[in-house]
Amino acid sequence: MPTLKMILGLAVMVAMLMVGWAVVPAYFNNYQFEDALKNEALQATYTTRSAEEIRDAVIKRARDYDIVLTAKQVHVSRSGSIGNGTLLIETSYSVPVNLPGYETTLEFHPSTKNKGVF
Image 1 (cartoon, rainbow, N blue to C red):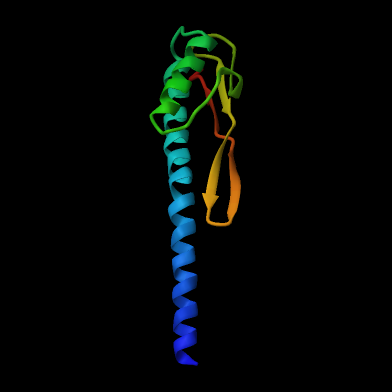
Image 2: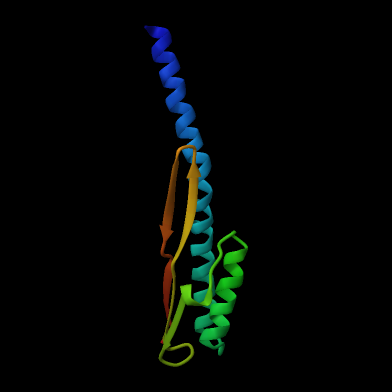
């Protein structure tokens, strides 16, 4: 009986490691991308870049973290004037996760909003 418990415990631990190995990189990449998105919004609030230029920069930055985005998945809106207004960047993407005998898709919706100083 103790041998069976040990084998079952090892099997559960191996299964948890396999799930972690497949899922953790997606969450880590999303965390890093959210940080880059916040920095992009902070810098873009005080520049004269257009929404399309900001969108292109976000898509390019996403590639650094193995995230594939299209222009339709990135929404940039600016209200007010440069330095005084608000910049909102929203994205949405999914990452497929394949485990032995099970497939799922993780949905991510990173966004950030930055208000100007004045």
